[in-house]
Amino acid sequence: MHSIFKFKCPRCQEGAVFEEKNPYKFGKLFKMHETCPHCGLRYEIEPSFFYGAMYVSYGYSVALFVATYIIMNLIYEPEITDIIIALTVVVLVLAPLVLRLSRITWLNLFVKYDPERRGPSLK
Image (cartoon, rainbow, N blue to C red):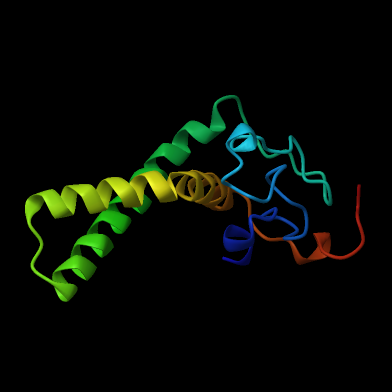
C-alpha cells in the first residue's frame, strides 16, 4: 500500500515510478521511468503491460462515482443534472490521479515487496 500512495517502486519502495511527481503536469502525465532508479526493476514487465491498468481505472472510477453520489445525497436531494455535472467535474479533475493510481496498483499486483532491496542503491 505504501508504494501505491507514494508512487514508489513496489519491490524496493524507494525509487520513483513516474518521472514527474505532479500528476497535473499534463506533458509528463504518462512519463514513467523504464526501470527503478533504486533497485533496477523493469516497470513494463511485457509489451503493453499497462493495458490491464484500464480495469483498475474502471474500478476506481466507479468507486468515485458511487462516493460522489452518496455524498451528494447526504447533503441534499440532487436533480439528475446536478449529478451529471458533479460526476463530470469529479472525473475531469481526478483523471490524472486515477490514471497514475491505476498504473501503480496494476504494477503492485504483479511485483511483491522485497525488504532486502531497501536501503542503499543496489544498481
